[in-house]
Every structure is written in structure tokens, then in C-alpha cells.
Image (cartoon, rainbow, N blue to C red; front, side, top):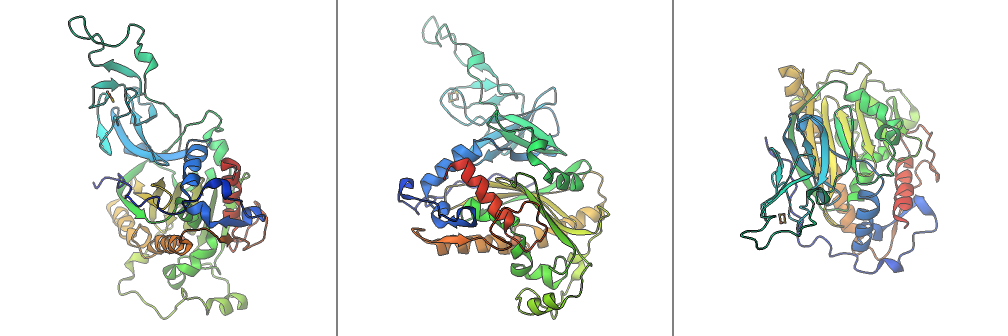
Length: 429
Ligand code: FES
Ligand SMILES: [Fe+2]
């Protein structure tokens, strides 16, 4: 199985936006604007790591199915911090910072493994799978010389431990004691997770996509139901998702998280829609697929929903696009680069035909699929257009100027306004 580890950041990660944060003032309009310096400034990036990624939010770190047995571990990231998800002998899950308590070396090097302890290769300190220090080499010294001080206690030098919570096989972790319980924090959006993850999961594969754009450009994208039927030729042309279909967008009460859905085959005839769609590049009824099998899907959740895209603040996506199921995890790699880790999965009891269908549909909804490839391309073009971001700001007023949490139209940027609202509350910008 190809591993999901991310690539090292490249050396040009932070060459943009070199002016100081103290000169920066958020536009007076508030959350209906996002200044382009927020996408490029290295000081902003540092502030986000502290206030958002190590702040009071839950971060997706993996699937329980990825660490199925005692001793299994997975290395991953929260923001740009390397962390390890482990399963101990008592089957409990832990998430620890991947940094030895001695002098800061990594304790897990492989993306996945099975082990009795986390072991630091530098000076052989070793830790239990719950992150407690169990042994420090030569702690007593040798022949009465060297060794650690008399007052050294193993229990004072464990790995940094995070709080962990799970929902339907998804594992989340947080650095903060202030973060409310996971399900309370997810609010109404937990319904969208429970709708899809109803049974034990089976991982089908991974890929990691380096996007040369700020993480927020990508985070905004799956919150943006406005673009889906416009940018993505495939959705409109082949009827998987159209504005004329029955659809909705649900934000939880605080506005941090969102999901939207569309039901294929529910087109309503409307003169408004016909006159707009004729101007969309994406709506081309003349196109036909040589092999239409990629579009064959079954309504496995018995509710007619062909597409559901769910996003939790600040870096997680769960998608159901036809029968393609995947999580996407945002791993920040400096202000101008993001790794998006895709985990494709099905259910443990899928038959061979269903597994094949899910895999075939990664050509549609995987990182290089006919739909998703366009999202990364747009993020990179945005980053390019922002240049050094000394000026300029985005305009986020589709569907109004307010947070409108209870609104229903998909033709609205309210989920993006809500993102910037929370972003500003967390960072103080
Ligand atoms: S840095 Fe880990 S044992 Fe020294
Ligand atoms: Fe998209």
C-alpha cells in the first residue's frame, strides 16, 4: 500500500509576504473580506499554528481502521506539527507529539508501523504507546560516572500527550483542554458524518497531493458550494450535481463546520436555471463519455444523495461523491504550500464489485480525478495571482453580507464568511 506520508517542505516555502504583521489591518467590512496578505505572510502562518492548530480545535488525525491492532501506530500532522496516533495493549488510542523529551528527535519515522514501544534512535530513550517514558539509556551512568541526576524521574519526561476523541471510526485530537467534547463541537454536522460512516471501514489506499497554495485557499474550496457546478465541468455535464437539483447546505450553530449535498436525478425545470446554465462552461450537454461506467453508482445510503461534501474547521474533509468515499486532511507546509492527504476507503463488508466501483471512481473524485484536479489548480492560480499580496482582498458577499447560519441556498458564500469569522476570533487578526 503506498504510504500517506507527506513530502518535506521545499525551500521556497516562505518567500512571499515579508512585511511585518504589525502593519496589517483587516478590511473594515470584516468577514466579507479576506486580505490577500493573510494567505502569504509568514508571521500570519506562525500565529495560525499557535492559535488554530495548537489552539482549541479538534483535528482529524486518521481512521481507527488504520491502527486496527494493539501496537499499531500512524505518523501524521496537525498543522505542521508531526504527531503519532497509537493503539496500546488495552486497545486505547493515544495521540502524542512526535518529539523525544530528551533533545527533540522524532520517535516515529515510518508512516505506519507495529511496535511494542516508541524508540528514539538518537540516545535510545523509549516510550510506551501511551507516550510515557519507560527507559532512558545509561541513566545510571557507567562505573560510577555520568548518568542522569538523582532527581530524574521517568514520569516527568513523557511525550506531549493530546486529548483524543472518536466518532464513527474517525479519530480527532486537540492540544487544548478548552476544546468542547467532539460531538458537541461538531454540532449538526455530526449528522453528515453518521450518515456516511455507518459501518466498520476498510482503507483502500492513499495519496498525498502537494498544493502550491496557502492552506486556507484549499480550506475555503469545499466550503464553497457556489463554485461546484461552475468550475467542475464533469458535475454539470454528467448530471452528478447541478444547481437545478434538490440540494442543501447545513452549517452547525457556531458556523465552524458545514456540509452540502445534492440529489442526482431531481432536476426541476426552471427558466432561470436554463438561461444561466447556457452561459456556464461546465454545462455541455453535447459531451459523451466513451466509457460511462465511471458514472455508475448505487444509492447505498438509500436517500438519493449523489454528492455530500463535509468540512470541519480547520482542516478536514469527508466526501461521498457517488460511491467514492474519502477523507482529506490538510497538512500545512509553510504559507505557500499545503499537503492534502487523501485516504480512500470503503466498508469492511463491501463485495468485490463495490470495492472496484469505489476505486474506479477515484478517477472522478480522487486527487487527480476529473473533478478534484480542478480545485487544486484554482488554489494554485489564486496563490499566483496574489503575488506578494501587499494589497487586495477577496469579496465574499454571494448570498448576503451576514453569517446567515440557518440559510438554505447553496448559491451562497456564507460558509466561507463563517470560516473567516472563526479565523479572526481564533487569531485575533
Ligand atoms: S533525542 Fe531522543 S534520546 Fe536523545
Ligand atoms: Fe471543487
